[in-house]
Amino acid sequence: MTSLPRRASLGYQINHLGRLLGNGLRVNIADTGVTPGQFAQLLALYEQDGLTQQELCERVRIDQSTMAHTLNRMQRDGLVVRSTDPDDRRRSRYTLTERARAVQDTLTAGARAANARAVRGIPPEEMEAFMRTLQRMIANLESPG
Image 1 (cartoon, one colour):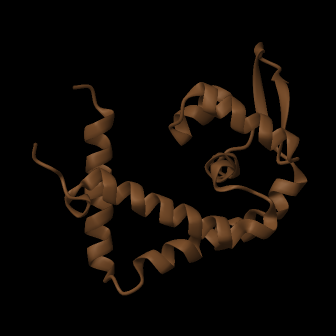
Image 2 (cartoon, helix red, strand yellow):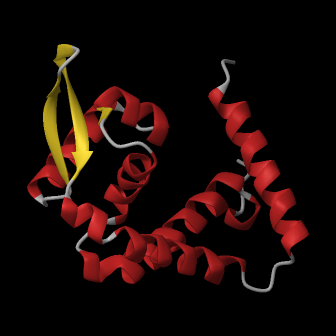
């Protein structure tokens, strides 16, 4: 059987990078009480408050059950309020609380600091090429077949 060295595995390297970035974010935002798992949902709601669970799933790219669990924790933690959609009573909309708004700048600064540490010493043109490549890989994997 032929082995695949971890250093040669795209999936391993990107997963490892993601864990390291998540750990850096966790440390940088620890004082806010927000977890990295809640961060993406907050970013989506900072961009457009009052989204439905389905809209959040599409923007954050996670499944319904994971989103439901995360939103329940965010409600418990006082970050979002759930209300019935006035146009369709079967749907709920999620809006930011004052607590969530109060930590926005700290969260953003924490994420920027984690990203800055990761790209330290890498020329901007290399980062631009890397980001374009990542976007192409994501598009490849999100497309059918």
